[in-house]
Length: 236
Image (cartoon, rainbow, N blue to C red; front, side, top):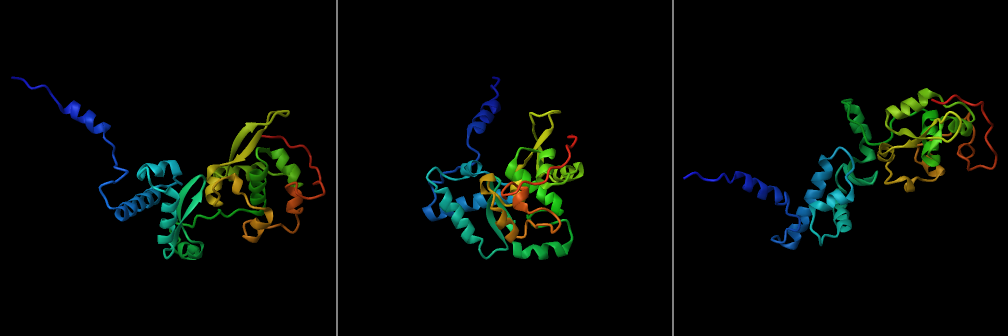
């Protein structure tokens, strides 16, 4: 008598089963909590980009207080050379700033998670875009009082700090530029709402006022005097 194959039905049942038991009701509460902490930390460690809260919530039970869990993971990492940060709408493990020199001295391609090396003009441009986006190259040049070249825009795009946004409703329909998720990552921001005051950027050493350029507050429109206009620029 020929048997009816059952492997297909078994596979279908296995596909319907959850890959991971999240609630872990069979474990005592302390062990359950430690398992949840381990899962979340392992997932963040293995991810090349920040993991959002909604993704990590799939790893823990429905009655888990996620904020307390994150707080306990951070407490566990206090003595470690890396920390758990909330950037670009998700969570990521990063080496602590004081270990940056230890990473750089190896010269093996590894680096800390801070901003890349930017010229004053590049840093001024990406900062202006962050605060004023979407902004065209002509608008950026108008604010800076000098031409922002295509090379500056090209390097910021190559670093994935900015991207072309919508075309501006002006003659020639030039591209307006916006910041990217990578911008949030490298500058340690959870969202654009966390952009600091200009003075805080300078105090942190992330922004330097060039001695020969206009005051940064005036450039970004926070001063009382208007920047000197520049000639109209042919947009990309």
